Image (cartoon, rainbow, N blue to C red):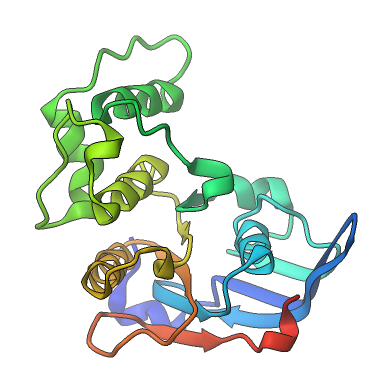
Length: 228
């Protein structure tokens, strides 16, 4: 839980100093430096593309920077960062099959989280409320028998966030809010992520500034020259 009154006194959640990633075909992004505060929702303002995805993978411990220094929650070891961060809304890693049901996905994730010796029965309404309730808030929860392809784009993305965030680690990284087509859906997603930011540090991206009044703690512009 992030204490609202003390959040400004805490060290930053993420400090990146001249980090860059280089792939087989050349530079992907960087060098790039940024500082993300601990607690609340931070939005990185950056043009979409492979470089932005690579940056999110780096910040969440899924990709190691080629150069520079990255400190996440006081840790510099990429394996430790991986273990303390949930990642959602990045198609390359957490895209779900649209032909499966919400109940199937929830059951699979709960079994994945559980120790190998524990029998996890098929998820029911109680598990749905426990996992999805904090993410959906006052929004209606998806039905267990609903297929992913039947969900609206906002519900489908919130479901992915909920599945990634079952253990509620200190850091939650979510793919760009601009992957949603509707303005209203993007605004609601930001509100929900800001709500999660009351107990975690939440980081996402957007190509354009997020409107005021949605609960965002900070918006950090990343210059186009920082990416390829």
